[in-house]
Length: 431
Ligand code: SDX
Image 1 (tube, rainbow, N blue to C red):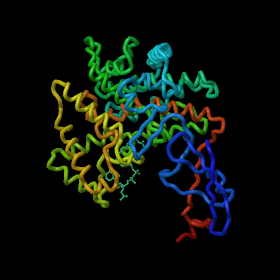
Image 2 (image 1 turned 90 degrees about the horizontal axis):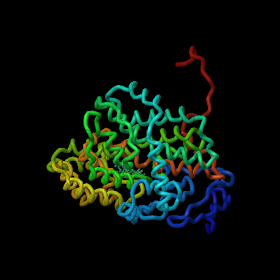
Image 3 (image 1 turned 30 degrees about the horizontal axis):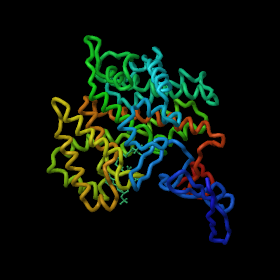
Image 4 (image 1 turned 135 degrees about the horizontal axis):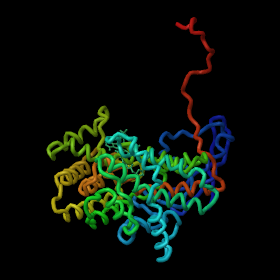
């Protein structure tokens, strides 16, 4: 990386020099590691709006031009030509696989889809109406109890096994959570099916009769998983990197990422979009809710709109909108009122001065829920589906973080605004 420098002159005239680091593409960064030592101050950036937490080779986003690259490949090209397992190999290993590499990787993932039978007991302990994200986080966290002694994080092969287990077992855990919620028997994975076909049969097949594969659904889910696979230092991925930076068991770090993803400001937005559309109900109500979203005194936000990075459009939303059209058009009984409402809401919002001024456009979550709903997946499983796609991104970032020879524990500082030092007062002497 080429290096220039910023010179900082403090209020007392103290001068310091801070190196500029230039990446492959995108904004340069200022290395402030020496700031406190030389100027006696910290930076202050709540929510890390303008702060780079690490160097990464995995994913690049250009928020102005709506660019998303996985290891340099545009997500539009991967969506058109690739599949989720191949994209997973790319994210984990940095290069597209050869035919033999892809076959071996695919076989390896299929051979890791079963859970330890003891893990299945956990599901009986949850209430039938437990939120599946709570179950996913809990059961993935329990993987650290099963694999705590078989993971030497300094061993690349064991880091591979970790990634394989996460990628392969999350669909099985997700499907088991769904089966619990509907009182149906757990369905074991099948190694003769590909990743999304296997997920569909674990979700929707029953022992009482043969399962007829829905190829449209399998194709749509594969594309959705590609589009959700990674997104640089988003909230949940940063959580995985931070948790893993202490040397914690990586399965626990992934469980922490699942919890972070659950929030409605992040991956929980796809579930919140459908709830919002159901609340809006009709096209006639759209303007009332757009006005609520613009009212700073009203906590209501237009779920599925806005993004920390994309300030023009989310390239994934464009692809997903087109796929939503295709999926609904190919279904026998398309539930289009919700989709029609979403299309109209998007048009109204995109013409509204407030949304234009605030650069608020539909994001990845705005249309994905409509597709999940059309495929018969219940709303409370939408964020679980997001987690299945993002699992490989989390694993890739954990591997990059843990392999960094200069890596250190993530430990931000703060601006303290609490009480100045004061002496303890005995309870009898308090007012
Ligand atoms: C994902 O980071 C990632 O990459 C995330 C993700 C991924 O792949 O990992 O892309 C996935 O999480 C997509 C985002 C899903 N969340 C939602 O759809 C929830 C609704 N969106 C907002 O909560 C919000 O837009 C965020 C959280 C997505 C972004 O928030 P920021 O960047 O912190 O921006 P902000 O909250 O400071 O908003 C800037 C302004 C504010 O107004 P002012 O205070 O400047 O007057 O825009 C307003 C906000 O009030 N605003 C909205 C709005 N989003 C922002 N107003 C109404 N409706 C909205 N949706």
